[in-house]
Length: 379
Ligand SMILES: *Cc1c(COP(=O)(O)O)cnc(C)c1O
Ligand code: SF4
Image 1: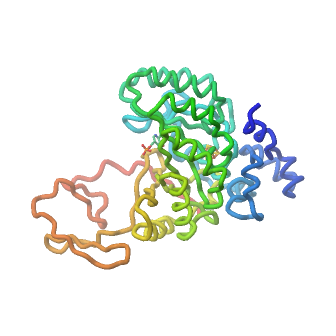
Image 2: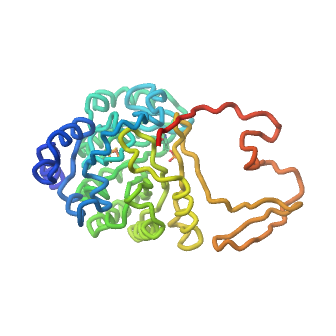
Image 3: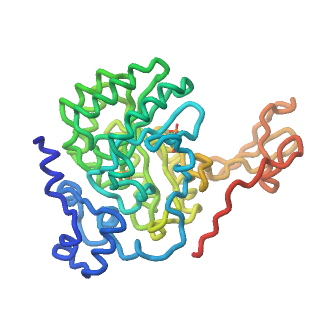
């Protein structure tokens, strides 16, 4: 057994552990465990500095998960865009390929709680269907291995999937979405790197949420992957009490760059049942973006996105930099809130930005298609 597998076996992973090691009330511990699995491997556990800190909040269950919040289990309507159980096909040219339900640490804020940790819903049985779906859809040029965490598969299982994907001529790039460099960097072994290298172009998006996760071990794992020619990106979820602070976010983004990881997305927390206590107002995300752009390397600035409730895909949000128009000039402000005007060309613009006060009107005066989804939330 490899070291990472040995470490997984030593995880905190039961209601009994919660009661004995963290003083949970028996009933709450059992309920929490049955609602969404608990697994905290010893590496990630060792990053906790004190109860309630940003590492603790991400991995130790909280009674707030049990609140009846009325939020959906599948806020992104992934299941309605799922032609076979292992595939989510929402965009024209790329798909998510769910390859395992397992993770080395179960994030309490996971948006896919309805499936993750449940091997009846995501498993090897559906892999064949997924590969056949991709092979028979020639428009799919980008396959994103997801789950769960695809690096929970053994090297052998993973290589079998990569090999079969590479046999499909229209698959141009393969992406792997994995939290391992952050939560169990010991998973990144020389053997894994040797395998991945054979199936280039491969991209990896990882998932760091707090600067304390940028440890020497994480850096070693990221270095090994980069040295294998794999470009690394990062997806962060904005969460209350964890990283909803411009200074914390700035430090995280800078530390990621030092590990050769390029910040890619900053997600507004999804409205997933049992995760309401992690949500922040959108104004907080915009404030953070406002304090990144201009103040540090442009490379450190991710896209801030809301994954649209109801399955509309990721929608980018920017602080308001365009203040308006004066004649043919466009009025802008920079990161220091200094005002500039840019003389625009007079021709009718090919691309028309709808004015904010009439967001639902198109240039030709027609109404936009329809409001697809309206979700009301109690608090
Ligand atoms: C996020 C996501 C993708 C990938 O989106 P990019 O913007 O290309 O990174 C693809 N499919 C689904 C269903 C997604 O949620
Ligand atoms: S690693 Fe990803 S899929 Fe797994 S629990 Fe965390 S957020 Fe969910």
